[in-house]
Length: 105
Image (tube, rainbow, N blue to C red; front, side, top):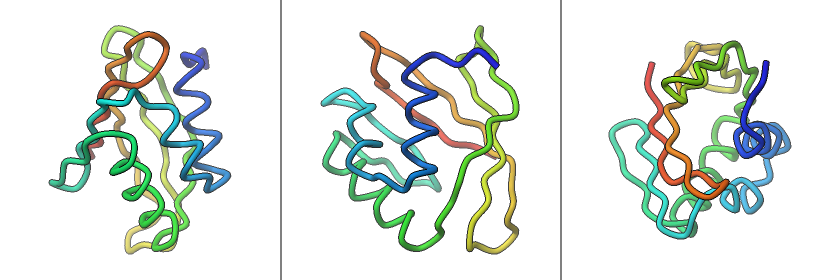
């Protein structure tokens, strides 16, 4: 699968549970929408993913990437009810970084 470099990097950082490096994949003004909540900017994104990593130990296995939609489908496995699940990661990229990420089922 031919993922944009920054998305491949995001998957790698998630699977290494490296919250700080994960947050560095985003622009300073990035926004993440997940589970009905909005996380604005790198600091909030790092706090969100760090909390998630500690609670769920979730790993990502990319399944499909739609270049037109800039959407990654990935199997997410971890210590949460219903694991594993397949989620869709909708990206907006800017200058080689992630500007927006919306996670849906």
